[in-house]
Amino acid sequence: MRRHNLAAVIGHVHRSGPTSRAELTQTLGLNRSTIGALVDELSARGLVAERSDRARRTPGRPSYLVTVRTDTVAVLAVVLGVDTVTVATVAPGGEILAEDHVALTTDEDRSFDRVLTTIARSCKKLAVALPHGTMVTGMGVAVPGIVRRQDGLVHFAPNLGWRDVPLGARLRTRMRSRMGLDVPVACRNDAGLGALAEHARGIGAGVANLVYLHAEVGVGGGIVVDGALLEGAAGYGGEVGHMRVNPDGAPCRCGSRGCWETEVGEDALVALAGRRPGGRAVVEEVLRAVVAGEPSATRAVNTVARWLGIGVANLINCFNPDMVVLGGLFADVMEHAGPSVIAQMRTGLVTPAHLDVALVTPTLGRHSVLLGAAEVALEPVLSDPACLPVQDIASLR
Image (cartoon, rainbow, N blue to C red):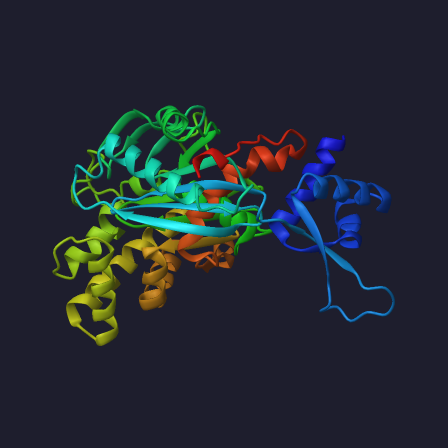
């Protein structure tokens, strides 16, 4: 019971931010003395601290807020993209301490072994820069593909050209051998992690049913049903980018034809605008051209908006969510052609009740997936603070 209550307190402060003992008592349904003992223990373990809340001008003694410490525990969060690997150190509370970005410009850069080396180098660079005494307790990795939850085997990441690669096991071995850092490695689908983050601390906080969509070269989805991430029987749910929406459409890297991502991904936008593929830089060029009024760019974003509305309507009809969160390229499309998306979506909804869905962009922005990776890496500490896995990285300095 004590371990459960410790997890409840640290979990609440982690997700909701600085909170008074009185608010914790009311929210968690525990008495004042129990909350006091739990906060004291978490403080002794270096996970929380208390500070005066000078902003609240109330009569009597000043109140104190319980807040997470960001100098004791950190995790490594990794986002694998087609063009970039992003690595960050993240503390409880979702505070990003530092980031490193490495461009992937060739197929060799995207090879499994080369990506492992890139991740390990970035992780070491960031880990040794942490404040002295900060413990690295885990790693979370966001993958644009189908990932086996138990061991991080990537069954298929079509836009990276990977099939059946043991990412989780190899990364843990690499971190142990290169850095002396033996921590759990949690690998998950990137869009599922984006959904997790937005539901935990973003625009979807408190929303029971939501669909999170994220588009770059590929398109991924994360679906939250009754407050829990819907992963399916084998953990492979959410592959919405490979819904077949246009049987006469373009070939997809997955081997099929007319998948949704071939109509709404970055490559589709760039091609429709008459540009050559070139990663995010070319996408930004097209979006600037839309603002400048270039006809081909405007037609391109409106075409993508139409297909986006079609796909969103299908997902709303299937899952009846309270909210659809549109991240990555989709947030850009909403900015430039939101009315077109909404109009097309409305024509495809089957009941008036579906019209109540909120169509929004992430409050965490392009950090949604990164913070989702941090969430799964922090989970062992947050679920059982009394059994904190400790790893001293002082030897790396």
